[in-house]
Length: 150
Image (spheres, helix red, strand yellow):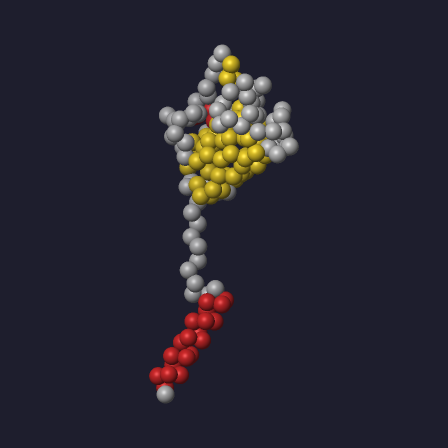
């Protein structure tokens, strides 16, 4: 009889702990979030496509760490979020894919669609270097990137 009442007490204790969350495994932090406000779209259709880099040799159009694509849906700005980032140094390249064909439009090598880079807020005449666009992630952060070009 004592054994049975101890078992019932154990079940009740477990049920109470589970109901309150005590004793339950707590989620572990997987990293930081980076929120990017992209502003200045000249058209309100299409998609803003962004790539996040942590490898200087790959920036701005090679193998990226993460990518995000968000439709403008009638707006001239959009918010992108990169999640679960380990602390480190990163750079972003992005463009407004106005015709939504998943390609950065160029004519005779010149941009046909708007583009942007982290930290760089003026038009560029050639591909920027990672060091020109880099920033640190040591906590959840937000940055703004204006669309440049046509």
